[in-house]
Amino acid sequence: MSGSVRAALLTVGLVIATFFGPHAAFAVTLDELYQSQTIVTGQGEVNRQIGFRDCLDRVLVRVSGDRRLLERPEMAELRDKAGSFVDSFRYHDRMEGIPIHDEQGTHDRPHDLTCLYKPATVNKLLASLGSKPWLGARPTLSILLAVERAGRGFVLASDGDESPYMRDSLEAAARPMAMSIVIPDKATLTKGGFIFEEVRAMATSPELLGGDARTLGGRPLLFGNIQWRDKDLGWTVDWWLAIDGKTYDWQIRGVSFDEAFRVAIKGAAQILSGNGQP
Image 1 (cartoon, one colour):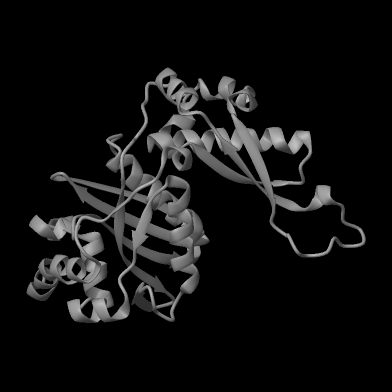
Image 2: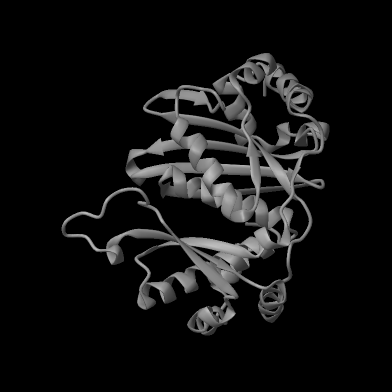
């Protein structure tokens, strides 16, 4: 284990904490927390009920922070009654402003379906599943990600040229969990000396993360090492998070980077909400 890697890790807290400021958190109102959104085709009753079931799954995970709830056997019965738990809902045409095609009706167009719930309703459902709401300001995650494909590697930067789609995907993964993320820019990475090899070593060596380096300016620090594997027909990803003196790691194999980032954010939420190992 190189001394430069260890020194760089001890520097990361000072560099990024100074750049982004201390103790950041992402505050959401109760109205914002107790809602969820999915995509449906048209506004017909059949697809609306499908959307209600998906929105129920999403709001339970969003409010509790525990994605394992969806594996509970009780969920099958709750999904059958998903519409009865919705207080109100609204649609947004995702193709708004685009004329309807000659062979296309409004029932063919994709819509965002947003479902709003009363807190008491969702809290009662969570209690029936042995869970509870994760209230208060949600921590903002600092992201440090080493990316490797076809023998080429880089560290993801907020203003980098390598993969803007990955940045957008990480932000999209955080929104359904009512969380926010911070990705360091190139200047911050350069100032900290975070070249690809050192960041990859940090992401795969939990023993490197000691003391104050476990958070960046009061933020939980999520390390990732993502590699494309032809044999897996997708991305292989290792995630690691340290919080309250404990270390957690989880992995996923053979997926798109969109799915890899959803797994990362939901895994971090599960830990930070007090629901244990992803």
